[in-house]
Image (tube, rainbow, N blue to C red; front, side, top):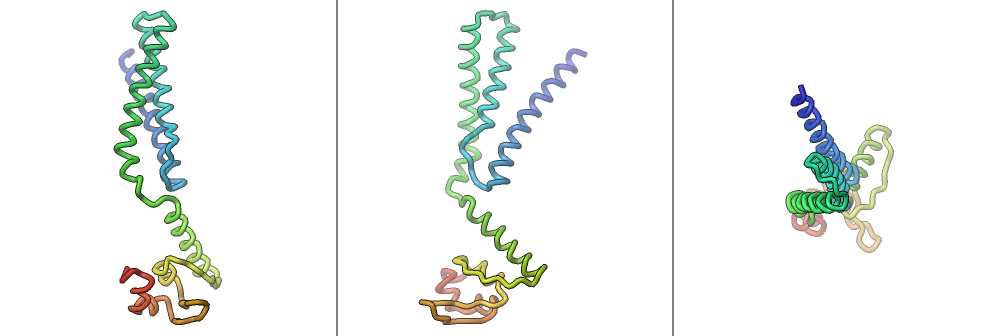
Length: 173
């Protein structure tokens, strides 16, 4: 029975660690769509390791508080540092050069404009640098050069024009 209880405690503890990491990554990647280098999950793992180390040292009979704290600090800081280094190498470094929040915001804005137009028939004047996205969304498009309309047509017609593709879509999308 004691073995089963210990395994239950181990499972709950490990599940809490996984849950903490999952919540951290969900907030970092899912909500704000960018890398956050605060690493709160690593600090929490370090705190949990400290608790485990103090409990283990007490179980081994080490009752000297300064010695127990020093050993706990070395153990928890070492493992947390190794964990942080691993997370940096495996998870964050490959994403360093990727775009941050802007593409996520642009997708949400275009999705909202599309929904407003479809659901309410609302006309939207869109001035956008992302020519491909804007013309895919537009029923009607105009190209302005120095304040004068130089081309006009449906979004699909403008996307098909070679001069649009060459000037605004870097030779094609």
